[in-house]
Length: 239
Ligand code: CDP
Image (cartoon, rainbow, N blue to C red; front, side):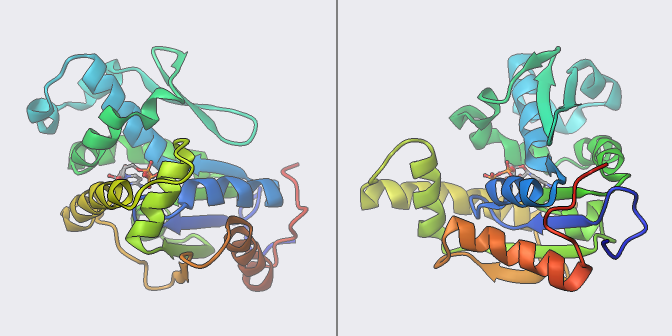
């Protein structure tokens, strides 16, 4: 039994800067607990991709209306353990990680109307609990009442190295690592500096520095917190 009145279990909020390993960690924690995973960044990425595909110039994005956003036809289709992002009904899971989207997503995510438009979809996904959600403002704005909040940080070069490895560069040269770190830090600066829902640690979040941790260790750290603080049984399944 977990300590919550939500029917499917607690909500775990994982926030942190770009490349801190939130999404992969959230997916693995969700699998351990039999929970669903909500990758909120994937929604911002899919909207960005849809606007780019529709040929809407980034200078015009701040004027997007809710109707225009609806017409972009972006949806998170519930999948077995998470959500599959679709545009016009087509799975765009791979394309939302492209360089093009990386370069533009923080600009889209800084627009208050876009954030407001998405909020309902994100809250709806969490209505029953049993969820591990990751992003920038999950513990502060989307689910301020989440039972467990963790804020993942890591040294910028370490984050860059992980991101490059994820993209298939086994042993990236230092120059490439530094260039990638600069890109990540650029995104962090926009995400932390924006007025609406900036990236910041919730007062009641546990900070986990993953720089010296292996992936399995960071997953275990969160699973242990869920067990110790919230009474979640790691083998608990959604009924
Ligand atoms: O995986 P990575 O940390 O690179 O990024 P992500 O979680 O996929 O998020 C991509 C971008 O979406 C971020 O840089 C933010 O600009 C935005 N985002 C946000 O503003 N709020 C969230 N809850 C999640 C993502």
